[in-house]
Length: 343
Image (cartoon, one colour):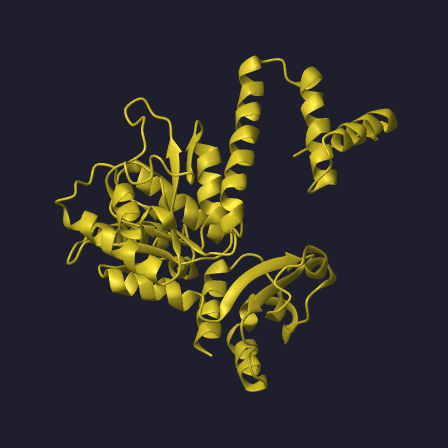
């Protein structure tokens, strides 16, 4: 695959873009914004089709606005709830979603849903509008948001599914799926795939059946009997999701995940795991024994904030461990996080 080549900078263009940025008063991330402007100007020569340019235009506009809406709430963890828009309030799944959202909100999390009816409205009813975000999509038959979130400033409406999905994943600290149709399946598979490939932060992915229900249990059996048996996935990939039919258990799964664990980041080739409390020397020795299979060089060690983290002011108050991770076995990293949370 041919790599994109970065052409030599045009000094005059660079100067004019910098002048334009200063004319607007400057601001955050000026270098990155300058690059966006330069690439936008390249569209004049590189992309002739108006429809293609409009995709880029709309995506940038939607993402900019969404990031602005979420920014004031960056300090609060958030749980995305997916599920069918067709689930009616008399269904047990609907009431279960209301109760889950109420309890997870009481545990300190905000709730994000697709802003439509069904399970999405149930999530907003349980969390209440103050603790809810709506990430809506314009569809021919579902034009308006549910009444709980319809007039709220934390409602965002997207034209494209791909920008909407990016916002869901980017701002979620956990994902909960109630029974649903193709859309719910799509969102669930994408969440698993992004974690499996390291393209998103690891987070709890909880599949909630109605009490005594078998929707997700049947799905899990299909995964094990076809994907796993035929070696289309790794056994460790099964660690990336959990199934329950109890809303209290779903809340516990999410809360436990953040008992000690905070977040991860690659700094060059080193994988940094940030924690509230560092493991003791004996616990660290046990980690090195139990998880040697995912370390390609050296050992799991206590780490200090890296220069890159200091520059970005990323959670400098937290403890850290670092390892040279094989960048493949994220299901095992999920197990490692569980062990760290149990220390």
